[in-house]
Length: 393
Ligand SMILES: *Cc1c(COP(=O)(O)O)cnc(C)c1O
Image (cartoon, rainbow, N blue to C red; front, side, top):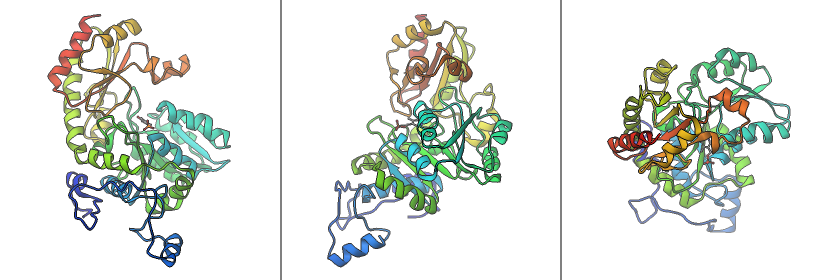
């Protein structure tokens, strides 16, 4: 194994651990515990567990460790901790490092459950949280103070696909001694090198592109060894958010094709976005890879790709949006993303339905807005499906 391998090689081989049988595929160690050679061995392992030693699956498991090593290396991080879901990773990373009186600055445009954790749970425990427009650097600068312990944002916002300048926000945060935690789901591990741009902690819902076939919930926190083993692990191993070995095996296998899938999906997404541009039935086509995206230059610099998600707004509002969605034959109506199957979502009535109207307005979540997760189908079939849906309006 080598940290010098290119990403695609790492995605296939990094972190593999073979048992004495030399199995080709990664083994699923479907076990909660481990037997010790002797009482002395048990005592020693509890005292100072060595790198390849395990004591209990809530603390760590060989299959889960393989996944953690693979994703950490691909991210360019020293270590990672895998969790039962993306939200276990987001809430775990924040709860592990914060205490009452600490201050957090977060971007306002967040995945619903991330917003709940910051707005309701953390504040209930005395953590002070301020929200800013993530694309407004002067707002970050004003909000981050000497008491700010963490800044948190999604590197690409959901569902309006605004891109946050990781490097600039990290500079502002580091100047005040705050850690930079990013939820990098929409950017994927393939298109974003968040750690090179200054992010300290990178969080994924592996439910999305990393699984890539909509099978299992999972999450992961990537960071320095000191943060992962010193701050995150003590919190998560005692509060119980560990990833199951079976899920880890699914995620390990998902990673093998991650690069190929993300690139194929992004190529299709660009093709689809170009075919939608200028359609009179649409009042907006948002794709970060289009020249018309307000942050096209930043996207090129930070991601080198527009990613796998498109959002577009039907001029006819909710009625047109529902008629369009109900007319789709290939694209499924659901709310996952990063799946091999293309998915259309109506954020205003599903993922973001609980947001008050003024917040929806502020974030641009109108009733005509559709979020499209582009899958692995032939892009020409997807374009036909979308155009047929639009023709019903
Ligand atoms: C899905 C998602 C999460 C939560 O992940 P789960 O695996 O569903 O718990 C968090 N952040 C973003 C940006 C997501 O898309």
